Image 1 (cartoon, rainbow, N blue to C red):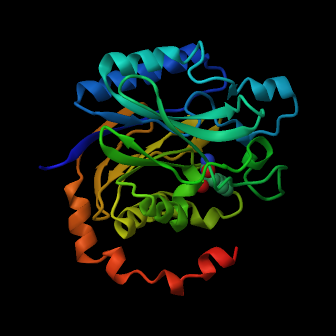
Image 2 (tube, rainbow, N blue to C red):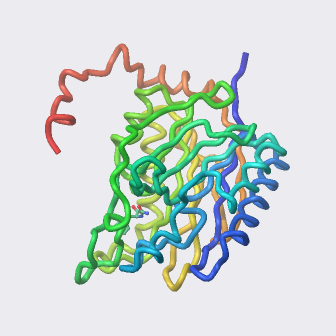
Length: 302
Ligand code: ING
């Protein structure tokens, strides 16, 4: 029997610092409704989808920092999104700043929520980019000030009978991310991102920002025979331009659907999961051709 999963990518426009959580959650619910109306069975939202991308600032006030974090998911402000999922029977993956209940750890996290509105699984961003203090000549990107590196590995969860993994922003640039998810059996990788258009450290690479967005995701999809669905937070957010280019990529490496705006936008594609086996057979029969004994440096060396 043919297997498929209809995927929606819910790109958002900017979420300004001045926005109330309630109004942001309204936007996410509206996107989820559009995704469900288009027949989607799962939706992916951006990284840190509940707030502005606050690592662009050096903040010292702990209360101000904590206001960007969620101590519980769902919480009083986000419950409506989970209720909408259950009502519409569409699950979602949502990026947010997690204040861990047990030990107060702070993570850049994405939760996968099922079609009944309950938690299926959690991923915490492994590749945390930037620095903990502003560096001269470099676009301020202080994720390492606010987040610890993820400690949950690259888990894969069964969602409506489909094996789904997650990755967050900078993770998408690293081949290890897709390889780990693939080796864990992923068929679909859901990604959220916030990517600045301008980097002060490399102004001459500005014209390559979208290429460097799609290149690793297409390669990751092709080389690991997975579907990739990636949601940007796009547009000018608190004075900083973020790229869009949200997309759904097939295991062939082709872009099957792509957002055209820098605003709230839903793109949908019915992902043919049988394409995975076809692509695997053509080139990537791991059992037959992969040579892990020759790849030792990958884990022995940073
Ligand atoms: N954003 C960036 C990305 O990889 C980044 C990371 C930007 C790193 C600028 C260094 C400088 O697209 C996130 N959110 O990971």
